[in-house]
Image 1: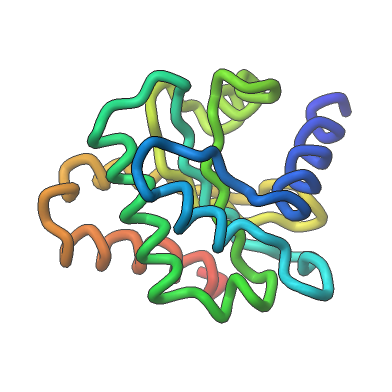
Image 2: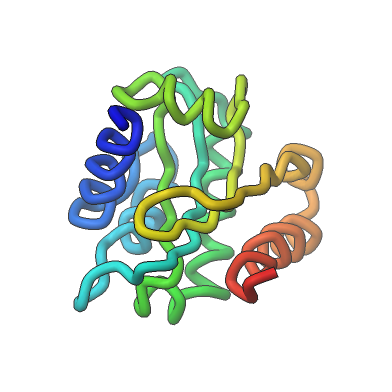
Length: 155
């Protein structure tokens, strides 16, 4: 029950705030454009795209976040506007980080796509190959796009 309350508060904060952590790269500017709540509120069923990271970040970590944000902006802007998709970079060192680590079984910087129903995650997938595909922009974009589409198209 406590975890649901924290998750609900975090999702609400994300939907009403910028939805991102500012970084030293331009990832923050792209992410903040995507993280704002569209007019009309969030849909009952939403696809959440989380990029979990730590406070201390390397160039590759920042680059992955930026590239995911670009893929979402390029391929899913209408889904973001319709509240069907929410992009949420999240610092695991912030409050609620331990709960996310347990729920998604993550120990390092990870991209997770999750389907929610009434603010509960009902299914999710970790897109771990973003690290391997970082040097292949087309492969990276295709992998992330396909991973998100699986959840938008109700698998």
